[in-house]
Image (cartoon, rainbow, N blue to C red; front, top):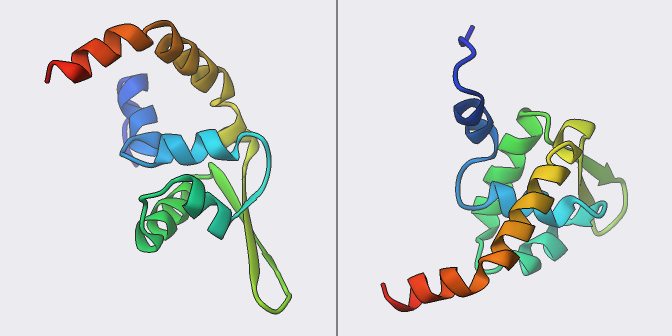
Length: 110
């Protein structure tokens, strides 16, 4: 069993990486089909999106719902645990909006 360490370190073990935060952000408003999510997250590859969603399902952040129709339909949505990230994402978006000029200046000078 893993020891509980720093809360930031532990949360990043679940949502860290290039895509998981963006996936979580896009699932906040309700279920989304795989193809729609892939389109919104372009240039993510199908393989990477599948990998990230599987990890998020394993970590109880996402629910995968398969509909028994032809062609197959799969939707993803956030669990209650995943939805609990909402206030953090709201704060992060506000910070990004409030500091957009500063960040653009940093990016322009790289």
